[in-house]
Length: 320
Image (tube, rainbow, N blue to C red; front, side, top):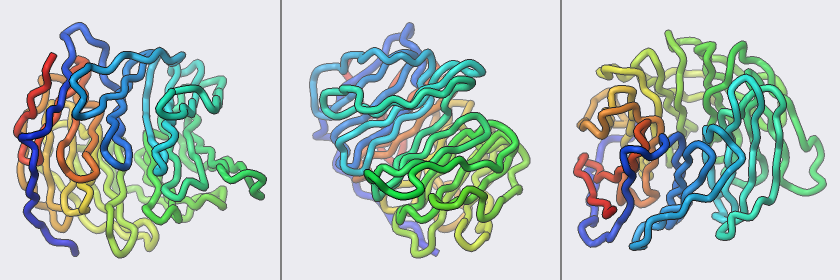
């Protein structure tokens, strides 16, 4: 197993900016690009691009989405994928070119919102949710088997993530299941059913010798899996509320979780030890993102407030 290692940060010189007023719409999605130069912020009907180091607050970019559920950058940094819609009515996936935010692709869903969207790390595939189903489509022009419908969940898919080598797609849903897929098969390789309530978040561990992912959910646990070989590695308890989001540190040695009580916890990825925790909000924290060089952790809450933190939970001041 990968053991803990101290993280040394140089944050005091970063002129990071951004805050939100009490009346701001909730932050429902966060994503950071591969070089850490852009933090994307999703709110109802709008998107903001925050550039650390800029002294100007980001300007809202209007979106045709009453609810923004998920944001994901392609690894090339040239495109941002946005998911959302209206629950029980309609959904939409948008591909926006950067830096212009010009719409490059639109995928409508006619009966439910799109809960998640995920480009594969090798940029060969794009996956998105459609209620209890998943879609995977090739991003390579003229590729055979360019679209697949993945069926297996019995309730709404809440999140999904690709393994770092793009060989596996893992999904979590309201049916409490964690399912493992490949881009070229329409049925799951395997299903994990150990969560006792719905898992909400999922993330793969960077740098693991065997593809390893973590899930966190309403049962207040983090569970670590090796989905390729069908093994649950461990359970991390000691959470006081439903886990709404989680992310690995870029070196893969810690897992950060955010919950419905406004707490962030830092967990040793090689054991079940909670290394630290802090109150990051007085409200639900729906979104969590970690800088690719571990320079900050971002949280976005239901009150519409973005906050940046060091790995030890010290707030980084954000000018108004």
